[in-house]
Length: 309
Image (cartoon, rainbow, N blue to C red):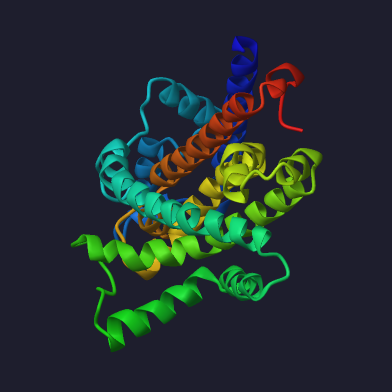
């Protein structure tokens, strides 16, 4: 088991380092942020002095090695625009993004999995067709479109919920729904497929022939045996939720990492962009690492074969 964990941790480290390296060099292709930071009418000498103070006059390789050295000491640098430590900005925004992601994931799991199981158990019936229509609608609707529709309906016309901000718990409702709709549809489809696959196996037919109630079969056997594809999708959807948070936070003026990332990209505030991507990469590979470890808990054979089949 320890060898399995070490192997997964090493793979997670390599994935995070690769993402950060790619971002570092691609980001520099967008242009020199020095020109956006100097005041209007600055002389060439002023621009050169600022560029040297930020380290942009050095070769890219030197800048990259210095960046890795700073990461090794957990130094994320200073914001070029705001002039405050990036850590302070990150720590003030992360709780909002985590609230939004957790709300969307709870909605997706709480509704998506039961809908998927019900669709599998009611295959070929009217309830399945109804839920299929709901799932396909949720899956085909872009996040920004569903968000705008909810703002128009629940904030403008009905005035039930605030259209933007983070003043109360009610402000979290629409962003969580907008972010979680696509993930909900994905969980429903995966759960339906997994349960249908298990329903066709011999042990289920044997249990049904012995008169075991269907509800007991679902909770005692199908839930565990169908868990691996659901765990896989859950790990992947964390990355999708973090990426989708950029759109949702901008649309609903939610003060999370997505909103600050958009602002930093526009201003070429490299340290903030790098820190946000670092958080996303660590969260993504961390969730995939947890999923790999859960595979071994659900199916001990995976610990000996080295991964999910």
